[in-house]
Length: 277
Ligand SMILES: NC(=O)c1ccc[n+]([C@@H]2O[C@H](COP(=O)([O-])OP(=O)(O)OC[C@H]3O[C@@H](n4cnc5c(N)ncnc54)[C@H](OP(=O)(O)O)[C@@H]3O)[C@@H](O)[C@H]2O)c1
Image 1 (tube, rainbow, N blue to C red):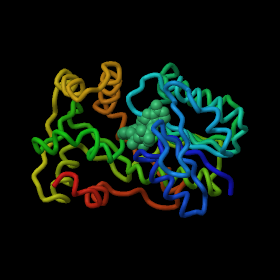
Image 2 (tube, protein in one colour):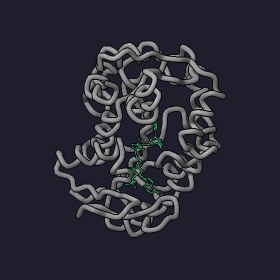
Image 3 (spheres, rainbow, N blue to C red):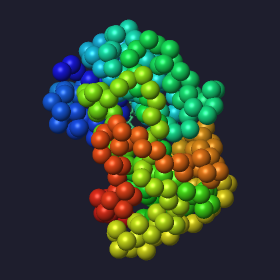
């Protein structure tokens, strides 16, 4: 099996993908923009472009993702797509986001279109909101106040466990899953944030509540947490799509791609309960 370059290999999805590929006997080259510490680490910086061509030239397959914090995802991913094209990669899997295809001018959609038009054998994964956000992005107010504070009303989301995205990507990169398509990935059911809070409470044994906050309060919180203003606005925009109901759809893509039913929120909460206790 040929080497596979994993962007975001130290992150939530990429680290799980590296583990799953190793279990299939596939050597993963782990991209990082920091100083390499492991023999399989490859240094590249998607923001500046440094090391990108060289890194892709060492592999035959690749997993592409854009780090959070950037609103010019088309530029960062464009560098990766061009490098994969130059290196004639035989399989390229892009992690986009559910809903990205709703607007042709959205940067993630532009990246999807660039990959589709590149001539590369590709697949696009469009995950819904990650369950993992509850122990990363949204963790601070849960820890300090026992509250999930978001401007999304009573809308439901079919939250997805990022481990399931990794399982689907592993099948597309190393298995027999067919290329040439885009897949909307969701969890098994749509839940509102009161239901999420109840599941977190049950898993960790500490009372956690949902508080519906205004977009202005959310903006103040995101900026106070140090997010760049343009990325805070991007998050508020996609949270408004959540509130409008666009994140509630449930698909069978995880089962079809990975062969296993998607992880329930209850299971995710049990597996990560130490974060909220
Ligand atoms: N969170 C959600 O609900 C959600 C939903 C749908 C789609 N998504 C997509 O998923 C992405 C996040 O995926 P994730 O949560 O798995 O990632 P993550 O855990 O946030 O990790 C980010 C990764 O990006 C790498 N990175 C940071 N700056 C970089 C740079 N300049 N050049 C190259 N690599 C860099 C980091 O590695 P080093 O620091 O080692 O370089 C790290 O491995 C989002 O940006 C979005 O596109 C997220």
